[in-house]
Length: 283
View (cartoon, one colour):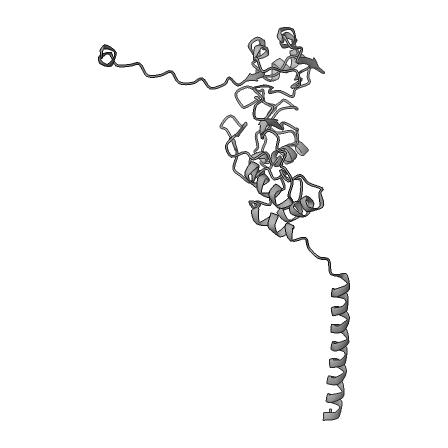
């Protein structure tokens, strides 16, 4: 190939490159979308966990949604009120934050309380066990205890006890809801931290059968319904259900439950003052 052919080819490629560069430059200018600077400011104050607890796939998506008005400024469960205040300041609005919510496992059917249907030797996953045999425990409504909720928690707030039940650490739980989404039996729920009374059972079997398979199951006896002075608890489809709009958290329902299926968390009592030494009393 002679020099002239090479120069012609090089000139042609250079010309095409110049044309494409010009077209791309024009397209970039015409199609460029200005990013709201507040998006970057919001991302800077977010904790950067990218947990999805806000309902969006990550912090970037959440920031975009806040600027567009599609997400509340207090929508980051990890950041809490401190981050909400900062985002609100960037957006020039007032923050509206509700009560903090934490995860709860609505089941007490551990290895000690529940009957077995046989050994389970499959994948150690609640979802996998649901698709195969339902796991080791006999109750089809109860926790299988294989730890999908603990595995998916990005904050280490859930551990599985020796009794094969989830234990939630309120101090670590940020209310992201990932455990709620992953539980195949809908046993993980988000509750305001002030709730003191909960029916820790999801069994809808008739009472005499529920009693045979789990010593902590609700047997639909109705004693809680009769005892409640606020009409806040009723047996619906063989299961006691609390109406939290009416519940005053008095704990009376838990006192009459024969299987202790209703939990009542008492407020911590203030420690009594230490007794005054006798010699100081005499003074």
